[in-house]
Image (tube, rainbow, N blue to C red; front, side, top):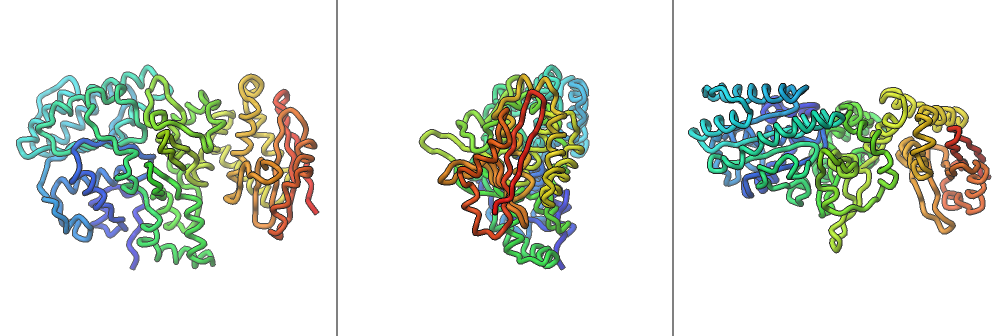
Length: 519
């Protein structure tokens, strides 16, 4: 009987005791947290296994050896000494206001103290309470501090900079206590989605070893291709049999949808574990990322900084520019990288720079929906429905309906935005984003001997060749496809070829198209 897939299970103890499938990461854990230094920071996208890592470390440092009996670390030279653990998940601590954060942080620490039969005196600040707790627990043994979602109170107030800065100052003061307690500590790990500049949050804790882009941590979270094959083939075979396709074809589809994340200079790619588990459990390849949460802070920032995304695909950035940012001056590319919407696709050793792009189809689809929500007056659910209807129309070769829906979306981008702020490149990017996520076989800016094709969209029976123009005419766009014979490289595919010229006039928000079947 197959083990249960750990859908939304982030407790290591629950996973082991209740017969869930666990991918053994304990060798990586040992090499980083046991054989390495003691103070760590790790940033990874949401739903990527950070909470499970923290839970695993909690059980490891608590000396619960029997939970690990079937895993690599069980037979290692780890000493299994029992350490008191301070485990905080800031996503579970209410923080509507800075004062509420202060009170609830104190309460969470006092609850941990009670678990160890320690009574703490009243302290005005969470930092003072943390100091007292560490000093009391250190009488048992050296203390382990595990803080998950360290940045949640800041990100949740990103649209209110004043409140976000108040929460940041509380956390800055709180974290600064840790360094002074070095003699009492065995290990420290802080995890989160974003990485704020050290001077912003960690100025008092400047001895953290940031392993976010460290090659040693490249496989720590997420599934490698080999881990997928070694651990999930029975689930993949069952899924493939249901779909009447080969297991190899299903693996290829999973790879296009969920793989592609790269977190270091070495080219190691991993799958999003959350989406893989959902796809195998439900036996349906779908966008599970977008359904798992609405990152309101991202939509807010896209409203403010949409103009910075037009060259987002295969853009090149220095290491420092994507490594961190400050709350008062957020670099949208750095944020998109840290939150998992962009990933490393290439590294230039000579210039210490990265090229970034969307890791996979699921993420590009999610990002497009968020971007359209940010720019238009529609909410996320409405945009998702319209995107579904666009896909249905293109699959049915109903171009009239297709462009009616597309024009409707653009009509709901405010007039002041379209006439004043959005430029030709912005429209080009938006249309490319929309069309390219309607098919997993879409290709943007394909280079041929005759020039660069704006977009190729391939469905089961049809290949669409799109050319975009801005404040010109759809006929000019169509004629360019014909003059440059963009269709030639697809003649051997035995599919119907549709040529589509598209023009957007931003003065009246009018989207004009003309199509012609190639014979």
